[in-house]
Length: 390
Image (cartoon, rainbow, N blue to C red; front, side, top):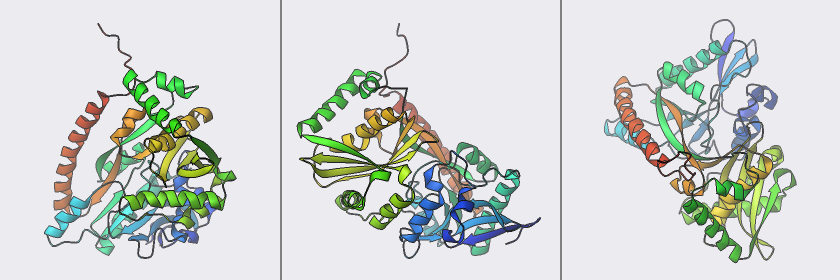
């Protein structure tokens, strides 16, 4: 596909066709580690996407005079697994009408419910024109390939508003994030919570202490293959306990540790010097954020999950002066551990106007329901009230 004034759209079936330097030049400083060439290409090279995974690589790129000036990380999806925005009912509605919902186009970071840029154009002076060209190209893909829809998951707020103006429907999702209030210690963090939450957290931590468990923090640059092999055993075990298969493989984590060690931080729980559980943090220092990605254990111990995946991570954030800890998708139980609800959005373009209208009505109702849900959660905030009662 060719645009005017030497703008040229291309579809890439592998990110390695673009250099890391050229791709990463499209990212702004606060775009985080998940959009980096190193992360996305590692998914492809280790077979986590592509092949028969149902994630066909189809990155949309825009060049001007042969120079990469814009891109969108795109996948042709044959299912809705690994997205954290659930549209199975939409697919069922299509099927009931004898129509195909899949394949669909997805713009997202695979298996990663993290907000970020989805229309990449770096610091280009003609950003508006680049965005328009990419979105027009995305819509053309639907028409030219007879696809049902395009979905852009967790864009930045400004991009979500732009997409709404371009005819996309916006959908709300609720996540739970921990915010650092310049805490100097874990005890100071606890002091900001209600008495009930404080007592609960202390009780959970004491249970782990009674099991004679200690913790080791291993920065990515200090990690070795043995660390990642044990971490993967734990990660895989979490899926096996839920009778499912992990999306990521051991090769991916090892490759990521080689390419992006500064962005990784492992936490190991140990008993008598032997590891029994592990969790992984992805660190984004420019944005002062930490993302809790995966956790697992080879032995069941009450409250070990909360300590390894949450409390040790919060202590890390306090020690490092990190502002935000995102603990992953969903999970009301996080509120009892000091996390607060936040609403982020995804954007959906439905080609068939009849389905677009019906889904739009559904999303309007869902938006009202999520608003009421967040209001209800606010009534159960773990933080002390700042109001002066009469």
